[in-house]
Amino acid sequence: MTSRSSQATARTSSEARAVARTQTLIKGENGIGTVRKTTLPGGLRIVTETLPSVRSATFGIWAHVGSRDETPSLNGATHYLEHLLFKGTGRRSALDISSALDAVGGEMNAFTAKEYTCYYARVLDTDLPLAIDVVCDMLTGSLILEEDVNVERGAILEEIAMTEDDPGDCVHDLFAHTMFGDNALGRPVLGTVDTVNALTADRIRRFYKKHYDPTHLVVAAAGNIDHHKVVRQVRAAFEKAGALKNPDAVPIAPRDGRRILRTAGRVELLGRKTEQAHIVLGMPGMARTDDRRWALGVLNTALGGGMSSRLFQEVREKRGLAYSVYSYTSGFADCGLFGVYAGCRPSQVHDVLKICRDELDQVAEHGLSDDEIERAIGQLRGSTVLGLEDTGALMNRIGKSELCWGEQMSVDDMLGRIAAVTPDEVRAVARDILGRRPSLSVIGPLKDKQAARLHDAVA
Image 1 (cartoon, helix red, strand yellow):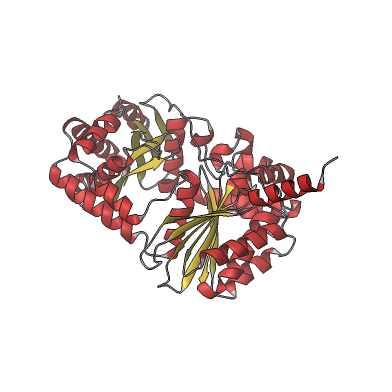
Image 2 (cartoon, one colour):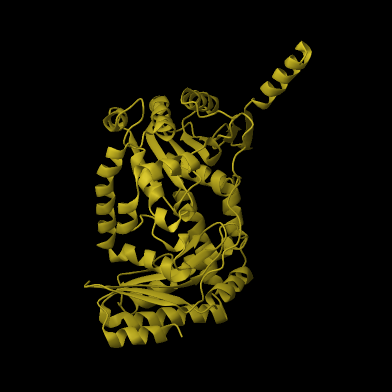
């Protein structure tokens, strides 16, 4: 038998654990750019960035689930679920969800990636409570009815077909498969026709319950907002849905681990009757947590990040062999990719590939000049700031940072890290990344002799 004093102590202890914890992660000047974080009992994290000079706000919820969390038979389930959360809840129909934001001139959308999913709404600051209520209702109260699953299946199959009709997009999925093979990171986010047709409402509901627990979610809001009001409104919405059941639950940690990429020098070709051949030449890159990622960003910018970059100058400006040519990096929790894309006439594939391969080899062996590195640092610093000029970009930055890194970095700190990159660091990264044997993916109307030569291009 428990005494009254023991019961009182237990209640007090329980109440103490149930108190939300609030931190100021970045202190801005006069409240501008201040980033705060509150962790609610139940493990739900809420991060906000205040920007009083605007009249808008963007509210989003990030889920710690992406296509890499799918088994082969579930490929496409994360994206399918993204669609279904717009189809209705116990409180709102699909029309109610869309019309609520349309009525105030707001915008609402979502996107699915390999390691996360995000649902967001952008509204006038005065309409933020509405956006919070609607998006929270979608995330906590989705019905996932069988009839909605069947209707939305057709829309998703059309989306897959649309992607297949865009070889400039499709070639990046092909390159992921070339590098990662038939595992979660190598499979398409949308899934395939076969896997989407095989998904049932019951399987998607189980996937939803497993991955949309509050401990797997990060709420992010940016704009002319008050952090404490956002916290109260989000907490009320989740409590109304009965989603904060376990006060002792803690947020899931960012992803970690190590993944070994497939052997380099792989070639995958997909024959299509297109006007252009679409090429991705690349190699393993870096995980997004690698401290050398700042130097890799500078290297990527100098190589293929703008009109003054080496690849743009050599392939397009000097020779006119391609309209679009660029390099890019993709960083995941435990690995990454570095790639060069070009779209050209099929007869020019080998010339374009030789130039790209020669440039990568040249930079790997001899590095970039100090002038190229200085220009790339300036370009990267400018594009970083210009890319954060709206509330949507700010919401993306703080939400993704909390979910993927578990910490926040101010814009000034980011600019400082970029400016601190040295030429020696860039050259070291170039030797490490570009010195590896590349792999190749090509989509286009390739003849047999061309296909044979393409395998030689990465030898």
